[in-house]
Length: 107
Image (cartoon, rainbow, N blue to C red; front, side, top):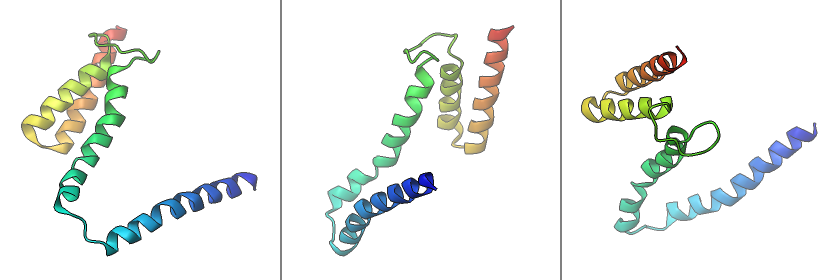
């Protein structure tokens, strides 16, 4: 029961902090430079999530080596995404590269 109250409290605090800003933004016209700047938020957040996972090894050190299978798979996935613009193909080839590289390193 204590965990449920804690989760409900965190949800309430999160909602209370974010809701007034959303209401305010909905009522005030924002200048065009703000909208242009907001276009870069999703790629920046995605890069902040993905890049540490790709370049760091299990000991949280930067590993820019051929033994880093996530780095190799990430490079392959980035190249496939850039050339084909096909999300499904990017995922399939990226995961296939990751599994194949790990199998080659283990063997």
